[in-house]
Image 1 (spheres, rainbow, N blue to C red):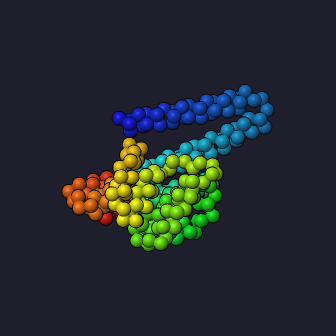
Image 2: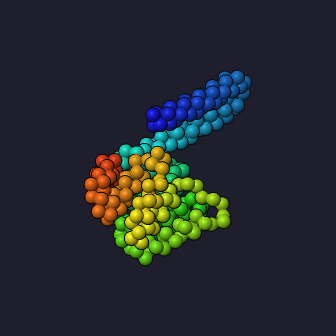
Image 3: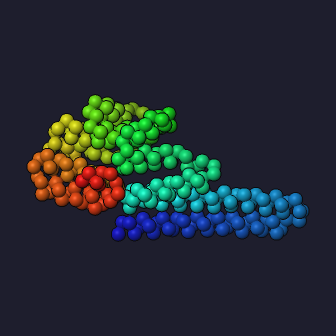
Length: 254
């Protein structure tokens, strides 16, 4: 039901946007037709064609980008997401989606289980990720999961410390890109405080998660339950994570 509503809103916005573009095209056409001087006709015609060309290219690239995000976060289909990313890079003549691809690559490498390569990618683009608080949040959150799976305890502690410093920062508040209950849960898991971890993870609002995020949550909860010797429920959650996460590396661990 919720998916249908958002799909309807998205489609409605697209129709409205293309209607505006159509009105612009009609307006430019009227200027070309009504202009007496040849120079004016050429000027309006060129401006209209260039403007519409750029707009149509952007909308085409935006569609590829949205499909790419959907493939990773909802379908959990890594091969499809990679194919769409390469298509976007090839068609993005003006590098308008360069920053988005940098962020996407960090998620893609994490989801592919290429944790060392993901950390190298974050390091190579450190300046970019430190440009805003939101990007920095993504930077440390992604590092957190890489070090979690690599079992690098010291680096994981450092990332968690940085994340909570961001949370308590007096600067402009960061957006709720990730759940603090999830992050706190990982901190407790790292400290072997399994019951506290599970309590925090239970507070995460699953209705706000996409399938990718839900896979990570179910995996963590499943691992907690196994450590608490609740084998039946633990294995059930891990099985559910595998079914939802499909091609994600974390789903194969479940």
